[in-house]
Length: 309
Image (cartoon, rainbow, N blue to C red):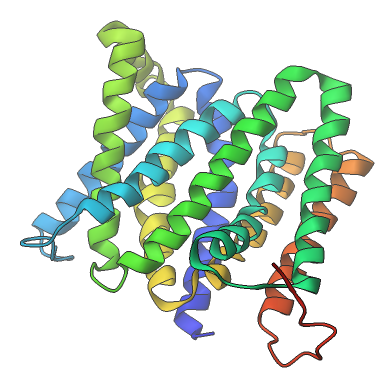
């Protein structure tokens, strides 16, 4: 694995892992759609300034950007809609556990869409990860209620959107630069979320949310983190990593984000962490490791390399 791509992967995973803390803090005060509108408007402004001052050139002229718009439809639009409403019904640590499923869904989609084989032990590893999620979801639903179950379902849809993004981003990276992809993603998010916020809450609601953030230094800091670090910087690192590594290898960095998010939720927000949370998280991470390890070992014996058809 190239060293710079490895560092880039660790960077975006850590930033995303901590982002759940800041997002949870803001949506306790402002409307979720208003948060997304402000976050991506700030991000769009930052990438535009970076381009105008000559730090990053754009190579979009004369190219068909439909593939980039499809990319942006999955992430940020689809992913963050599911994530922000799922996060409003769950804990940050639960959201962190769910993002560990991204490599698993990438592997399944690669098998379904690209015709890649899944080795027997790889399939068993996928089952372990899914079982870990079910262990957490069933126990939390019984203990907390159906609202939490709905939140986990929304987070799973976010995972599916992120997995789709991983596969499409790998395909478009041969034609567009990481900054091209990031630029289109940020502007698509800004326009989409602003329109949704206006349609659902109107100008008054969006203005009130902006005023609430502007009047709180703590919320300003959280918004700067989400709009600059967790949007512009993190997605540039994501697009760079995906331009250097296969989607399945890039997706495994979600494990780092999981560890960061779970630890931050428990240590910084005093969120509950039960025996089944620990067991389920361990099963998810072990399953993801196995799914990638066995997929990368084509020279295994015949009994180990049997594929699931």
